Image 1 (cartoon, rainbow, N blue to C red):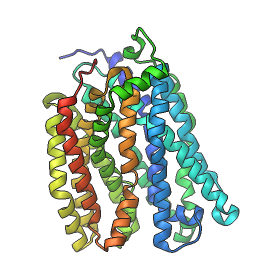
Image 2 (cartoon, rainbow, N blue to C red; image 1 turned 30 degrees about the horizontal axis):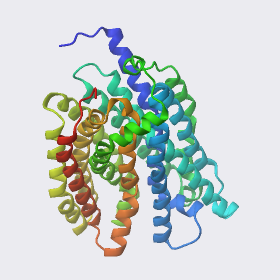
Image 3 (tube, helix red, strand yellow; image 1 turned 135 degrees about the vertical axis):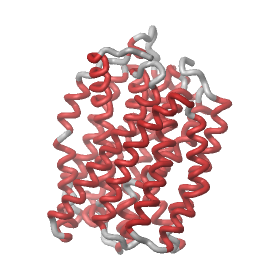
Image 4 (spheres, one colour; image 1 turned 90 degrees about the vertical axis):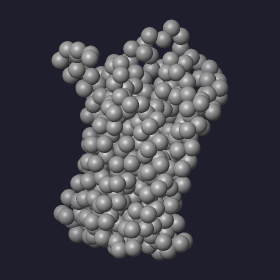
Length: 425
């Protein structure tokens, strides 16, 4: 067993906190948008019926994900060329644009279509930065992890997002408790966003003092952008396979977090209970991720990936059908916690496995591209789930969507066994 000096251990803990801090901001913003999607839709989008407003707002929520693949290529290549620290600072700067824009833009009633355009542009910039943020964080944690602890360390990338889920949900509950429904709908939803803006300077300060990873600093050559693009093209099979593998993570995550308050309203459940359930899901995720990440270091990634995807295929729709047959707060909580266990277990093993699959020379850009392509699909989960319910009048349809995506990821996990590259390839 590795003996670690207390100073080294504390330095690693501080390093994890500094790296994961930007992930917190990214997810906090997305969660607040998801929780208050209906109010944001009324504020920034043209007039329409309630369902149209909701679908339009969820489409704006999802459209930022379409920029992620471009951000993954451009910013991921920047990180592979100029270093992990430089990439993390740049993505944090761009992410801040999204949350500030959403917070301060006047409403549609005040400036018309310009409000819609400004908010949309803010989401596109944020999506562009988020395309590389998660990959940069995961690669940094993988490269700083001690031997045999990579799964545990990389799991804290996703764990930081769960802290954001919990914090955003609790702030949402507090805001709803302190303000009248009218005030919350008119302007109260801006308060959680403003709190997010206030922590941006602190996050910059934390990341500014990050050291470069030893793995990157030890490189004897710096790749040109053309060489990085060529490396991505040569590894395209792994990137596309990785994208399919990530689909299960992105769809299940946004279904059980950002979509829960909206889904709860469609089930006619109390809004405060929906937010508290979302906070509970975040806590559940936070427990599962490091535990299963450490387990994957002991028994391997693939058994966990296969078990979680098979269970999702077998249970996602039946669980949703059980909930839809007699909606209640208890049933929603039970279903969400079950899906949280599947998400947490799968994601903990999947993220570190993806860092091991993509070629090392283009690890940041390859990881980011695979993840962002999947997130471009998964980020539309709130919209797709609501659209399916609206078209079929079947409240269990989110379960069918998750079943399909879990089957895609299961196939990818089985195939990637034959295309896997060594970590030092």
